[in-house]
Length: 120
Ligand SMILES: [Zn+2]
Image 1 (cartoon, rainbow, N blue to C red):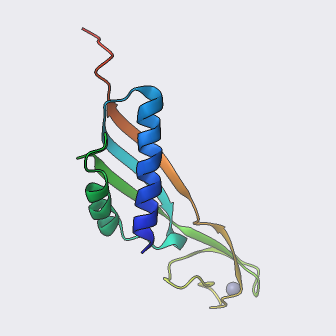
Image 2: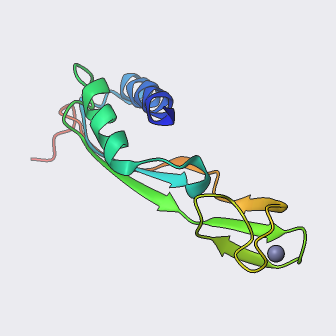
């Protein structure tokens, strides 16, 4: 399942960031995933919670934002948002489409605790 691969890369990225920045704890992670990747956000959160155990991201809240899939139909030439689980043109039904967006995979925002900073 793609959720596992994705969670592993996410975890690697978070741990690398924590090492580089000295962040002690990640409390919230927001990611944006293109709809083409067909991620199940609940499964992703579940896998992430298990994978983040014993890392600075343990217990972090994961928010997954699924981005719409925009396609350009190569049959009718229209650009539209494909709502289908199959990637196709919603106007004429053609599967002969070019994906314009929907492949994104980004960390959108992080909330961290850094106990080396002291604002008191
Ligand atoms: Zn079309």
